[in-house]
Image (cartoon, rainbow, N blue to C red; front, side, top):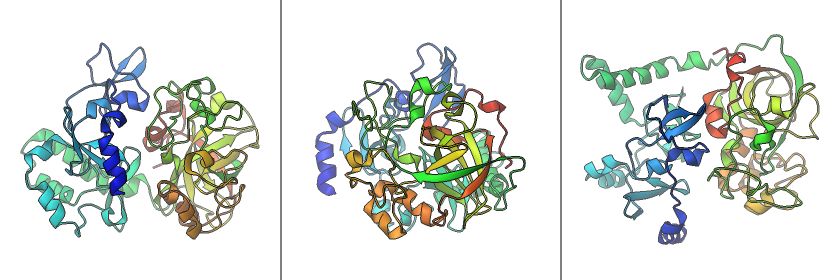
Length: 422
């Protein structure tokens, strides 16, 4: 591992490809004229030009942020160039925060506290969040969702919240942010209740499972009515193509194999014991893929060990092999099916991991998959309780931001869909 990182550092000038601003790495252009901030998230500040989202430069909080690189969770520097200090976390480059230069004792504190969890889930391999914004709370502690993955809220955030309660009249702008954090934490159970309301008046459908590593059909702009199609990744499953088009192509194209792959973050994950989020290929009795692509559906399982549990899924793929009202849930190790892009991407066997249709048969077999995909594989045997193609009732709903942040695709009529009941 040390050799791999060292080699990567030596080739940093090649590996780090700059962009005009952070948004180009997410598939959106940089703003050319406007300076008005319409929306702000963990990626940066956003404006609108020509009825399309665009990225605003803004002040960098860390090295390379305006070029689309994430900020590091620690101050551990792996490489320094003319732009500044860089770290290497979770298999990718990240920029060292500007505040690290003001903290001379940071590395010493990190070394001295190696055995002390600085944030929720750190000992289980989860990164620490860059903010104190809480999305979910469980027995372990508080969790956030940044850059398309779960992260642990830092222990120091609790102190910030306590200080905010005792200093309500000091620095109103800072207190507003901290109050929002407290409200998110206190009302978390109201947003995603453990006992979910049932779907009434929904349609019936069926489910299967797959993970073929191929480019999804909704990644082609001609197949969706959304302004931005589903994101496509390079072979590492992390680096997004911007733009993605026929010149990149699909690794699973038998006539002209390309270099585009499914992104690793299309795996499902649990919100709590009764609710999970994820992505699916789907087909319906009416309509076509232009109408289906990127829409979100709320599924309530009606058979098997997951009966009563629910998923909110976004449709990223379609296919002629799918039946009516059919949801093929994306889960690593679920079987590659007809196409096997995983052989090219990860060196999977000719029939994928386990059976070609159905995949692996136990949680222990998830170790056959690359580490980047093992969480999604284990999800099947944990939250999904190894259910075998359970039936569902379903209804269309507005897409949660957690899903659209990953795919980059928001249906043009999303606001007219039914809101989630929590």
